[in-house]
Amino acid sequence: PAIPPGLQAVFSGPGQQPFIDLVWAPVSDVDLAGYNVYRHVEGAGAVRVNRELVKAPAYRDVGVEAGKRYLYSVTSVDARGNESAHSEEAGEAVP
Image (cartoon, rainbow, N blue to C red; front, side):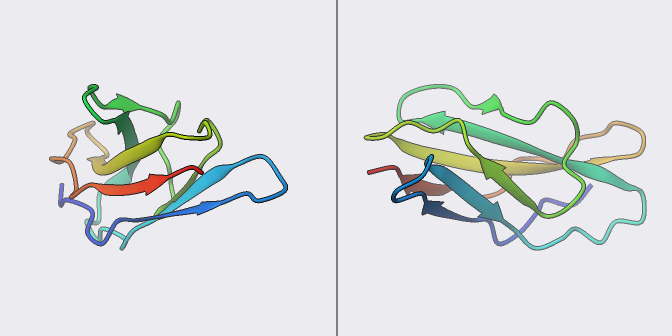
């Protein structure tokens, strides 16, 4: 499948539980089943953060901690379970 383009990460959460919203351009493959979202901190390996395939080109990561910078990438998965290469990374810091 095609690599998801245009990944962006935006922090939100002053006065509430912090989270990072991710958005990317949808993949137009006709057999697209969904997306996987990967996260890591500097110097660590990327770990998938979604349990089930993400159906829309957006994801909210509520598992973030203050004082850390996170890097994200996204892959697309087709109906046969094939996974694309990782997208370009997008990073965001949690104050």
